Every structure is written in C-alpha cells, then in structure tokens.
Image (cartoon, rainbow, N blue to C red; front, side, top):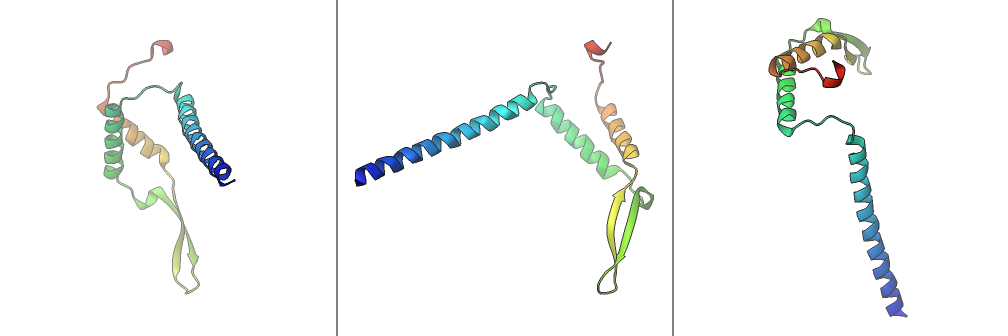
Length: 113
C-alpha cells in the first residue's frame, strides 16, 4: 500500500512540474502574441530613449504654476497637502519630444507617404 501512495505522490509531483512548465510556456507565448504587431526597437535605441527622457525630465524646470494643490487640515491642526496634480502635461510632452527629435533622424514610413 505504501508503494502505491509513493507512486501516486511521485505522479502528482511530476504532473505539478509539467503544469508549472506549461504555465511558464503559456505566459511566454501570451507575451509573444502581445508583441507580434509591435514595431521592433533595438536595445541600443531603447537605452538611448531612456537616457534622453530621463535627462529631459531632470533638466525640465518645474515651477509652482505647473501644479494644482489641494490642502486639508489634519487631526493635529496641521495644514497638509492632500493632492498635487500636474496640469501642463502637454508642455512637458512637447519638451521631451523635442529632445527626442533632436537626437534621432525621423523618417516617414513607406506606407504613410
């Protein structure tokens, strides 16, 4: 009887390992399916974009006028900043895109011309 139990436990463990491997394979294929129609971006270009955007955000001069503030009075009668909203995303996006445009040569797609 203990042989049967041990064989069943071994079978269950083997099946669990297979299920785990199939789940890993499924996730990989789902990611592959998500990416199938995406344009290809080399790792060097991606790293360049990361640097450009990081530097652009670091160099951008944020001022108080770019934000909307909401304040609350706390339990200990202290004034607390409860909400801070960035209001000028368009200007920031334009600034970042200008930095990207200055770094890359932009070509029109063949199917768009």
